[in-house]
Image 1: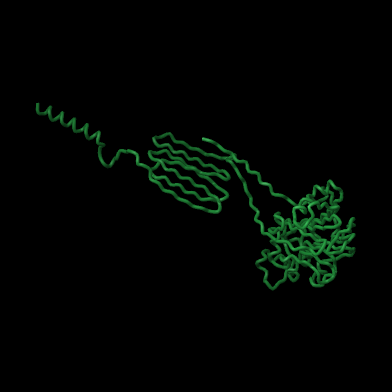
Image 2 (image 1 turned 90 degrees about the vertical axis):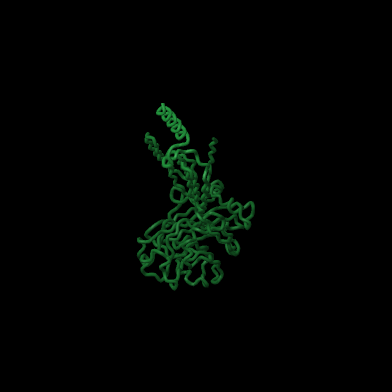
Length: 381
């Protein structure tokens, strides 16, 4: 018997860049925008900007130092801020942090992997190498929802901006999304499930790009819909939750793909628990329970019928029972998804057995007749 072991390696690329003070980040004061000077200037929507400010409510604004808020975007057809919004909403000040850092040395830039990501896309130059990378992370932030912030879920999102002075990249990474903002809800915590919201109540959270001239903009189609809360499942590059845009000219639309996260645990029975009980009597019963992931469970019991039942599913629990009796039955059950069931019943050639109910065997009958004949001869003498 040959034992073949397969080693499966699963690698899921993680485009989320490290953040926090241990990563060298600054911590932003919620009430004071963080000013970032950009050299070379950042080309955006056909213009070039030498500075931007990070604002509390999920966006950055070019060439602006004053405090701005989500309310500046209520009329999306008249936004006068040259801005990029990863999650424009009323973010609270009680929970979470806003971290940021400007990476501008070549070694650290290379570690961000932004060059490789951009070069893999058809709308960036094959030699794209950013002069700097700005990383902004809104970590575990809540929504204000009229002063009752502590009772609801939190969001973690990361905005990455990079440029070589000619081409500019914006990366949106939606790490965890626990809430979207409803402008008209006064008792936000009373609605734990978005399906409970009446359709007439508008969602005001927006994701997109604004040129700053009033009407010119590109809004992600999921914006201001209930689907926005599921944005973690969408991608434009294969990494769930990440969208990449080229933004030096008019931001280019991306194709949103839905992703499914699969948890896979390949195992070649390295971890097995077996319980075996054997009784030494004319009939021996052995019960063997094997738990393994994935596992195939053969069960052998002698009978005249062989039943093989196979059902396929990702997680398999195997129960194996072997009973040694005068006959043999084999049952094999494997569970994996998608479910396929096949049942095969075969009747092997029956073995020769003695019938208790049918009287003696032919050998015993012949012996009995011979004894009876001898006794009759003796009686005649």
